[in-house]
Each structure stands twice: as structure tokens, then as C-alpha cells.
Amino acid sequence: MTAPTYLDGNFAPVATELTATDLEVTGAVPPGLAGRYIRTGPNPFAAQADTYHWFVGDGMVHGVDLHGGQARWYRNRWVRSPEASAHLEESPVPHEDGGWYPGSGNTNVFAHAGRILAVTEGSLPYELTGDLDTVATRNFGGPLPGGINAHPKFDPNTGEMHVMSYGFDNPAMRYHVIDPSGDLASTVDIDLPAPVMLHDMGLTATRVVLFDLPVLFDLELALQGVSLPFRWRPDNGARVGLLPRGGTASDVLWIDVEPCFVYHPLNAFDAGDRVIIDLVVHDHAFAEGREPLSERPRLERWTIDPKARKVLTETIDDRGTEFPRGDERLTGRRHRYGYTIGLPSVGALGALGDDPRTAVRKHDLVGGTTVEVDLGPGRIASEMVFVPDDGSAGEDDGWLMGYVYDAARGASDLVIIDAHDFGRPVATVHLPVRVPQGFHGNWIPDSALA
Image (cartoon, rainbow, N blue to C red; front, side):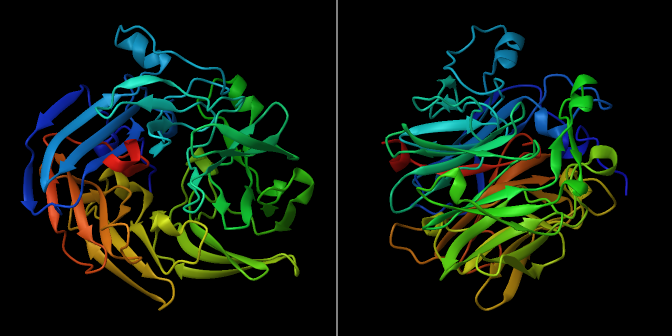
């Protein structure tokens, strides 16, 4: 299969910012939802197909406001990085110290300590208003010389934000804890033998799961001006580490695994001395043609046994999947359910091929079953996030929410699915424009911004 250029189909950027109100809805928006669904992704001002890489496009956030059973507005806004501000002929927003480059806010958007934050790994997050305007970058009181990665984990008991960063000059990963008030509480520096890409992490009630996997920064590619200079190097080996929360670098226990790459864990939890982590595994990344995704990534369960120094692997779903999410009130605790996007191939994300389609899958990790909602031909899903129905709801008592591109309409919808009574969407909010394929987002309730 020919790899996508990431500028075709629904990868193609949109040219303008838009505000649309009183959106058309098929079905009924759950009346208890009060907040905003916001997702970010690459939306380059200008790009050449022979040099562009999907991961580095200028960041644009897309949001839908839901209140009282109504979809009140849709907005899209470029995150005001220095490049975006210059292109839009605006004054730059204030920047605090930190990060090894300014970033574009194109990878994830979430709330912490009353702020909406959009981030790209290696940079500081950009604070956004509730209307998606950019305020400034934030360093949580610093220092954060490597910025932060785009996949923080939030401890539901303490309210802390746990997040990694990494660097290339002296290969290392850094583990940061940001307290509930939004201040940097601690940092642990962990030296590495080589400068690896570190995209995500795992968190349990007692430990941090670290990934040292063989996608390496390549100085030769960087000197050639390659926009994302990483290369697959399986000869470097692969390993996972366990760091006790509150521990130091000398406390990390490393265990070898077969060469692979992990962008996204679903969740991790303690099981006695062992750690169990569910995650999507790619056979390789940035290999031939430097394609960032392998053709059929699979959902696996890893049981990490520190006494035996072994990692036992079990395949949960090998049909091609990505973007695992779950009930984040259980982050670091034992979970039963997980949700992923089923895709037949990498190209399906961009509405390429003869019959592009995706599915939303619900995995019962206790019962060992998987069910799915087929979204239909030409309907391409992005990540779906779980939103609990209320604070006392059960693990799957809530909604799945995310953008779906409809090729027939040439525009996108915000789709809401009942996570418990899993089946047809309960509501489809029709947007007047496309939301290009992007990365990650979250439901940000009004209460998170109080």
C-alpha cells in the first residue's frame, strides 16, 4: 500500500478560522453535558508534499460547546505559536521560559488547574481561553528545559498531573509532577544510552512505566533539514522501566522487550508486585520511508514482572487499532473497559482507498469480548473520549465523543455514543466544515475551569 502524503483527503488543512452557532443535531445531545469538546491537530499554513510530515503541522484546535441539550457553537482557531502569529500578522503571545522549541500545540489539549492547555511534546503548553483564543505559554513555575510531552496522566485521588519530557543533547528522559494548583512539584532526570523518542508513559498507584524503544533522533537527518529527524533502529534494543513514584533515577528497574514502538497506552495498574498495562503496539515506526505508523497496530496487554524481569504479552485485538481511551477516573487503577478506533489500514484515516471506513470498539478486558459500532462507508473517526454521565457513574456509564469525517458531505460531525448501551450514536452534531484528521482532545466540563 502507498503511504499517505498527509496532505490529501481529510488530512488536507482547512484555510480559515470559523465560528458557527446553533448547530444542527440529529438525535438528542445528553442534557447533562455542560462544557466543551476540544481536539487539536496539524493544520499547516503551507506545506510541500515531498518534505511535509504530519506530526509537525501548525496546530489548530476545534471545539464544540454543549449545554442544556444544545450544540451552541463550533470554533476552530490556530494556536498562536510564533509562526502562526507571524503568518496571521498578529503580535506574539507572551512566552515563559522553557522547552527546546516553541511548539505549535498540535498534539493534545486538556485542562489542569483551571486552565485549558494545548501542547506538542518538547515544548511548553499554550493556555487557551474557553473560546479557544491563545493566552500565553505556561511552564508551571519551571524549570522545564525540555517542555513537557503531550500525554500527561492525572491521578484521580491526588489531582496531580504526571508527565514526561526528553532531550537529545544529553540523552535523558525527565519525569515531572505538577501539583493540583498548577505548580511544578518535582522532576526526576533519568539518563539514557541513546536519544529515543518518548511519546507517552504509564502510571499506576505506586509506579511509573517508562518506555525506551528504538525510534532514535538522527543527527544526520537533522542536518539535512528533515522536519522530524527520527529513524527506526531496532539494533538499539527495547525495554520498559518501572520507577517507584517518589523514587529516583537509581530506583528504575529496566526489563528488555522485543523491538516495537508504543505511542499510546490505555491504562496501567498494580497487580501485587506486577504491573499490568494495556497499550497499542506498532511493529515499527519511522522505518522504511520513515512512515510513523505500522500497517496494523494491535491492542495488547503487557504483564510486567519485576521479580522475574520479564514482560508477558497477550494480544487483545490484532485487527488494526489506535487511539485507546478509557474512564480516566480509573487512571492508575484496575479497569474493565477500553475504547479504540478500529481502522483497516493507516490510509483509512485519510479517507484513502476504495472503501474507507472506521469503527469505534469497546473492549471488555475482564469478559474478554470486543463489540464495535461500524460508522459506515466514507465515515472516518478520530479519537473518541469517554465522558462519565455524572460523578457517581459506573465505569462504562457515560458517553463516547469525537469527530467523524463524512466524505459524502465533505464535512465533519461530533458523534456521541452511549458507552453502556453500545450501538448507534445518540447524537450527531453536524458541523459546517471539515475537521482534518488530527490527534488528541478531551471533554472539558465547566467544572474543570471553575
